[in-house]
Image 1: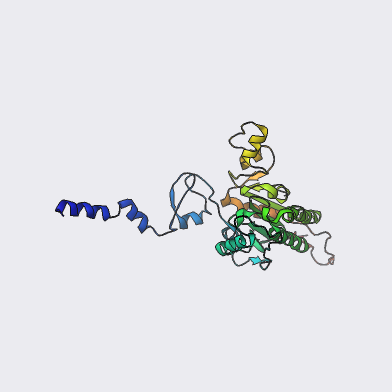
Image 2: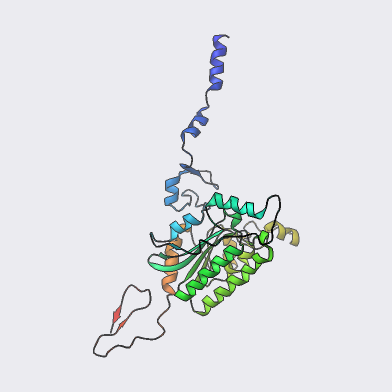
Length: 312
């Protein structure tokens, strides 16, 4: 072998500079924006609540991260963690539903596609449900419906506002009619919550579609959405094929729905916690009857949840 061949073989075996750089970057240390392709230090991105500082793109986050972003530290009390899904229809496609559930539980460390609990936002107690798109596309099965219903019922008993972070592909087909029943069940619990004059705020994130949109996602007293989130019922292609016409480019986006009155406000993720706290303070219920006090003592009035008192 000639000296030239030896150098040529050595150069081929050496990694390319780009490959070397990629290997030196620890996995997960940097995150690439899906919209503008800018690399951002993941720690800085998390500090900005997973919103790209270059283009404002909202990178998808999941239930654990949502809870961390919204709930005050050491105030989160999870509810109904023991409820687990079953396979009542013995559904099987290429793989049994039971095996699919186990795969997603192992992957996400969740029992199903929602986490529920009681916590505080800027010191204000709330009942919070957070859907997780990682678990079968955030689809709504019996467990999702049961956990959200129990959350709303407990909030009604404790007179708490309810916030649900929606992220779902819709009803879970593997549970058939049992999945569709959850739409009515959750809606019924929300009606009781409404009759108690309590606040309910759904936050529509990317994506919110199908049976979730057709039920509790659109039943809020105030409906919030993240920027550029996909929100709708049927898929875009299904609608275009049915109508046989081209839909606008921004169709089924949160901006499009705001224009036509389906959502009340678009709130960037970095402002969501502050906005929710302001809305909850504005809608704190007042006492139904004044407290009886002696005329010899000053009368003190305090609205529930207020941080100040007024003496007369």
